[in-house]
Figure 1 (cartoon, one colour):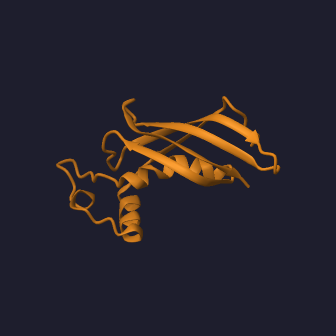
Figure 2 (cartoon, one colour):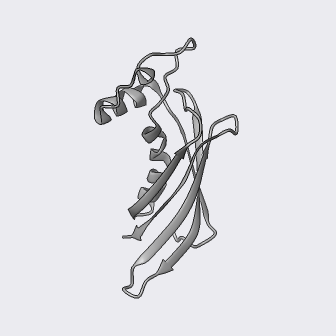
Amino acid sequence: MSLKAGDTITFERTFTLKDVELFTALSGDEVIHHQTPDEQGRLVIQGLLTATLPTKIGGDNNVLACNANFEFLRPVLTGDTITCEVFIEEYKETKKNRKTIDTTFLCKNQHGKNVLKGSFSGIIL
């Protein structure tokens, strides 16, 4: 994909119970609300699992992240479908022929409620 400043990249994912189980095993984040279902059988997913959405977009575009900022705005539950929009704020080539990228992102649930916002920047490999 050819990126440029002003572009928006969108990715959507529905989180499952299996996602939470795998992430719990991998991360060791075993807080009780990630293991105890609510009255509708849903679990609160880990914030960093939600944060895999913007990092996936970075990975799809060969971004070696240099920094990232996450602001978790509301819980995401299993069964929620989250849409992540990454906005390319700056895309430039350095004097050393490296391409750098600065982004902001916003993730919303299926009800249009903001759940996560932030930014990341890095080098395009």
